[in-house]
Image (cartoon, rainbow over all chains, first blue to last red; front, side, top):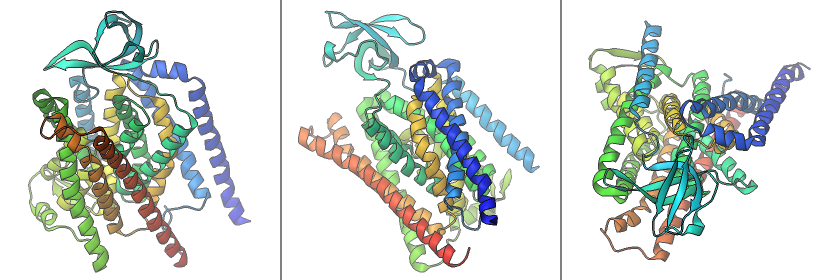
Length: 79
Length: 437
């Protein structure tokens, strides 16, 4: 019961960030024409690709971290 | 005092970043333009509309280009011919900027991203040496491949560096100090490249890059691999090298204490390693292959700390490089996020894998990858020698054979890295489980 209790929040976090990550990918690829045009206009538009990469790394990176923990793949000694 | 030093390092990095961006160092070559072809004229010229400005130019098509090969109304990258320092109005090469990405290419990008991420998390390398050629083999123009990979590298390195900092492995202060000098090294590397390009052209530049690749990877890779082999056989823990111990004893202010690495050393001795990392990153896009060995054998960090700290350097340099390429509008974000989809998993796997293996395993993986990649790059040298007239031209069959060797050697490097890391990790995890850890 305790084990289930401790995994619960992890499952929820994984699902939330997984859904968010999936949504971001859907958003990007469903607007691919606007994205490829705007993101490659150079100059201050650099903020688009750089910002997008950071956003994806935060959301998808968190999902990946939680997903690995859910699979029981943890660093040695626990960190 | 500690916070002051970290703040100074961050400010230093920002200053160098700003100056490098303003100076326009790095980024795409000047003879590369992007836009749309509107019309091909009967006199072998074409009307080209520049991207962003909308300016229309008449470009001459070189004789090798057939009018039917010109993609109309699709954003393209155009390489213009150069005569010495002058950029002409003649089109040398046209590449479609945004490749189609069917399911097969998505799968390929995911596989390459996963293993590349695994390698990054484990040995600290940015992975450009394998990711950029992989993208180019899918039809991505070279400049877009470099730019898109750079934009994927820095967030991946950030996630990897964060994880390894959490595990107590990454020395952030050491990483920032090295990153500052690495940015200087990039500028030096670019100036050397420009000098060679001006005097010996593209063929000379390609030959220089390939020779540097092979010499450095073979020499350093062999040493790292041999060192790891001795440690594995001897069963002892790695010791700090005599050079590193001697340098650490020299009191040459400012002396900096790097807590995580457990080292106190003069700032002046960190500069050559950082500069060499930057120079190599600018030349052959593999700064980590000199950075990590430099941190181990010259500065005296352990392989675990060196590979973790290299991710901090990769993050700073990757972000700086991404801004440069982004200013020129060459990042294909679709490729970036597709590679990130798998590499963010791979880098975290690789990072936690380092907690299960002995120090020398990182050296084994690094040495093995360096030696196999040197074969891949070495296979390109005969073609460059032929371009320079230093050997007879290659027959089409021979050229195809060398290209195949180069490609499959890269595949072998990725496969070897994936297998060695996975086996070492699984063994370590099973052992830890058996010991109840």
